[in-house]
Length: 165
Image (cartoon, rainbow, N blue to C red):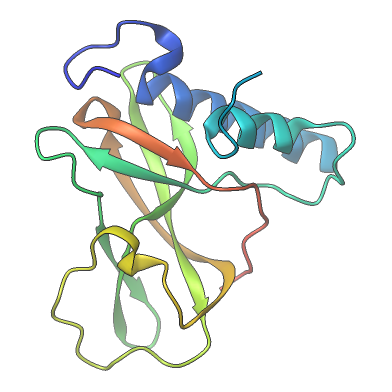
């Protein structure tokens, strides 16, 4: 996969995110041979599989930035009675336009213990998904708009239905 330009539409982060949105939209509408075992192709096929129960609505994914290829960790603010900062590397695609600008919802893992009150270290790599968490993803309602041309890699997680916040 190229970090500067797509050599094939199937390998481009933007095209993969478009396919994720399309698959998620198909599942939402229905509700109203690769050696890899985990990846976007498998997650899309699993979400759209007629054998699968139509309960999963989302293909969560991770993005890796161009240049340093570090995991992209986004920060957003939830507006409850007070402002609450959310940091995560797990996203749900909401829309993608023709210029590869995408609206992504930040997803959090449901925690088994409360997070520390003051988290000053930016999570990186697997630190964003290690215990203590239940493995369940939770919607945050926080959306960001990103330029998908700024990313050189994507990793899809298994389809799921995030818990409501």
